[in-house]
Amino acid sequence: GDKEFERVKAIKLFVDEQNKRNVGKQAKKIPEIPMDLRMDYVLANFASYMAMDKMVVGLDYASVQPTVLDLSKGGIITISGQKEKGRELFSKMFLNAFANGQFGDAELYIMDNMTRALANFEFNQSTAIYTNTVDCVSSMFDEIDQRITSRYEMISSGNTLENEPWICIAIESSDAIEEISNNSKVMGIVKNLIGKYKQMKVFLVLTDVENNNIPYGAPELLKLVKDNKKYFIFEDIGAIKLCDISISLTRKYAKPIDMCDAYYINDVDLIKIKTV
Image (cartoon, rainbow, N blue to C red; front, top):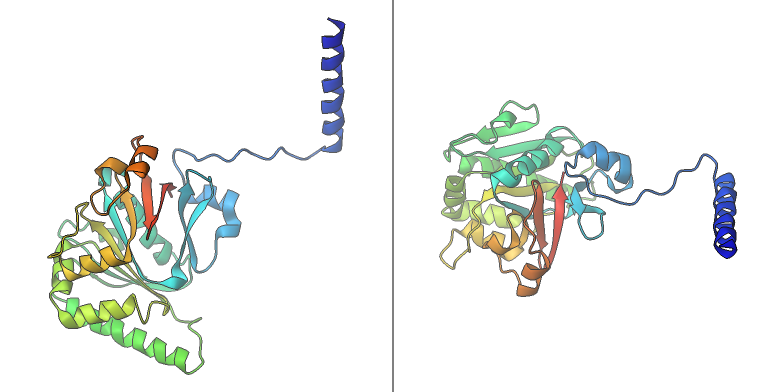
């Protein structure tokens, strides 16, 4: 009765006092992940994570914080899984970020497949080479090698790469993977791009690697994928075959993924993200 009335009255007085102190201020929003995550949402809520060499690829379901790819470290990333779950959308978002100048000037070298999945980049002003055959594999990587070697010499001479464009090499075609793997000179260039020269503003992305185990006899480029272990996989965790997943993680993430959900695997770390 009376005690309950006094308690409610005291709470109301406290709330009123707090409201007076915080006129014009809004309560801090509880972090949430939208079903349809778009870049404008990221910009509005996580602008501090954006930088000229940092790509926000999605939000981590566990922390509700951005998952950021540090482009300055270079290397190779692999995108795999179902088109219906957002794999192709993510690949296009990744390339669009370069093409639209999000990180400054960039040049795209695209090896598409016969269905021309990445055809909308063919005539983009940032595209240096677009092909859906394997005829120019050797000449394309020779050109890239010359440019990256020149950059390495610039750095060795004390210069910076500030005015040099990013070079993004996208490989959609399984035929291109075979062709590269069978050419020892090109494979040597690729190994340098993700090794010795990985900080020369160059990035290699395989946009459609089949979700299958990579055996001992696999193409050499896929063996590099296995060794570098940086994947975005658009599959339910129990269906992932591209790399080994522990039983504990399989149980933890047993729930089926939604559209544009992916597992980001970076060496031994695995997180579930909603991709942009």
